[in-house]
Length: 341
Ligand SMILES: O=C(O)CCC(=O)C(=O)O
Ligand SMILES: [Fe+2]
Image (tube, rainbow, N blue to C red; front, side, top):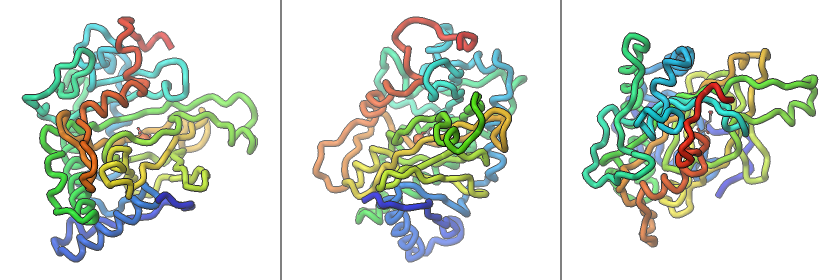
């Protein structure tokens, strides 16, 4: 049951790396259960990742500082018709609604899942290999692959604790790992112009760079920079700021996990306020690195209460995708070039 929280809770993950004590794990699972059934969002601190927070954000800054021509070499098919990658790769900013102004780069697991039952879909191949700029132009491929692997492992550790907190064995969600297609996404929201003076009222009306949404999947782990702007909706309808907290990762529940939990966990609405050109720490715009834990395309996702037929993850994600800006225009046959915005 979502509550009228006024800030996000903290969850200290020290026990994950320092202890195999079942009691400690049980306590941590209970704490995660509590935050996911009230705020649906939390700051994770003392995570077992080998990357510092700064190193993760530097990976995003480095990628987006590449020349546009280099980024477009790995653009998704929707934006460059000669390319065959449909799910992974670069998407450029586009004109239109605030959500379109961001640019992004997405990778899946370093070994494509090679799911024998994968659906060769006409439009989007969820199981495709990653695409990379030429090694001479881009050196951080291996770091990104390693980060993907570590975030996948951390997500599964959290899922195991949640399984126990929901009264199931720790391995209850192990089948989610089979042919998992989890996505690591680098994001850059360029700063926006505000034409009038920056009064309190303008501030309220400041444009969004990411419109209100819930995440569609299981679990999201987000590295955000110090720009600020992330806001989370509480049960009283108030937008609560979720500023950068040093060395923390923001975690939240997606729609599908809310369903898996039998409605015990909440997928909380969130949005991002745009940073203003020339102002403050956000003058370069916002950089963030969300990781979306995703099961395999043919994984059957069921409620822990066992009272539903379940849904195939691939069906779920394809249905959701039609509302994501970076997948729109897939069927219009028109190539989208970054110069057109
Ligand atoms: O960029 C952010 O901080 C939030 C991104 C987000 O909510 C998403 O990609 O689902
Ligand atoms: Fe989100």
